[in-house]
Image (cartoon, rainbow, N blue to C red):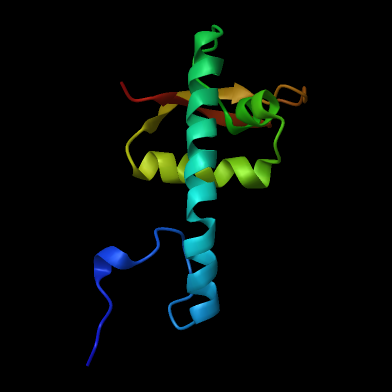
Length: 109
């Protein structure tokens, strides 16, 4: 029986029993890596601007991208141990109600 190598698998998520899904994951991987780099750079820039951590909202505003494209990159960067969640929750920049807060993240040096 011929098993694929664990090391040849795409890093993007895909459905195991779907060749189409696996092909899509392989295709999208360079784009994911580019988005991760953009998000990481944005977190650095937001923190350098004087904020004590960067939220998903901050990075969305900084990059001018959709939250659905930005938020998953926080998880992948965390899993790669490039960023970590701080103990701070910051208010949403466009809302004034006290219930809309998000975790602040920082780059691991």
